[in-house]
Amino acid sequence: MKITKETNIAELVNSYPEAVEVLTAFGLHCVGCFASAFDTIGEGAEIHGMSIVEIDEMLEEVNRVLNDKELLID
Image: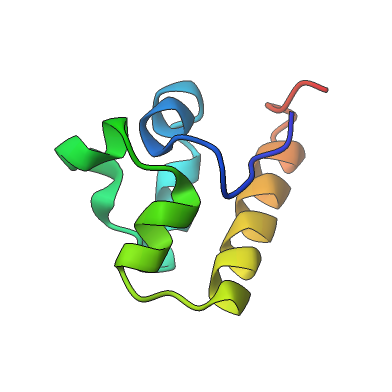
């Protein structure tokens, strides 16, 4: 499984708490917000003014961290 812009924030955080550190480092602090239950990573990032490049970099880092920890399952 690859984390994408379409991944729900709350589902990501609940399944992979290790992702929280990466998301907050990139300025996506809505991981504990009620809206995270409804928003995707892409929607939350756009609401917080992140550029497409920043979103892509954040997703690359999230996937790298989770892959390094062997948490993602294909």
